[in-house]
Image 1 (tube, helix red, strand yellow):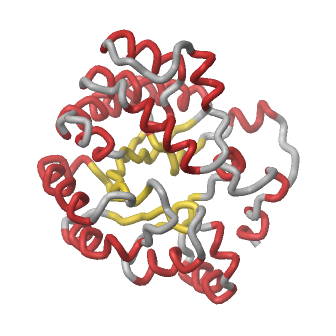
Image 2: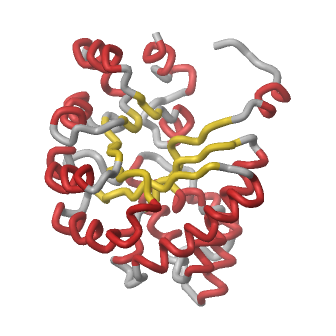
Length: 269
């Protein structure tokens, strides 16, 4: 890849297409919200949180992801979480953001769906007003839960669907193939929502194929393992299918050993 000057890169207007808002929770805000809400976390300090962010795989990341989410209880918490992200993004030159949020992470803890959404939407409106940013929310189903749970989430979302651009599928990939959610994705499309799914991050190329054939997605999130199937690669290229690839995440979660080993160059070819 060509080396570009840092100031040039900083000045380029950017689109953020793959961001999990709960995963953007910084250690300082996590501990501040824990104190505000009197939530006991597994961590005694900001430094301990930072140490825990040295993941070894996707599951170890998800463990701290869910521990961090436990401090999010009120509309104000969700607003503060998202405002902090939008402020950082704007400083980096982001002008358009498509944000995943995981309502089941919160409703399973007793936080009402409406509390989550009202807080996030307040931050979205603030980002538009202060930064001139366009923002789309993507409601993600958790694939380690069952499809009936996803349907319950879709029912809770009904009053808010005009504020969401689409639905996604995330969480632990291995052992949770896309086909597990065929019916709820069909129901989501019937309601006018765009469809995307994490596939081929840790899971096999077959999961990418299932996302296309069974879920009928408009976009693949990650998709690295498509390279294991040349016919699938040709199909993705022929369809001009968008893949939201995350090289730094793949290195942090040990999907790829080093950034130099990342297959994005081959994917671009």
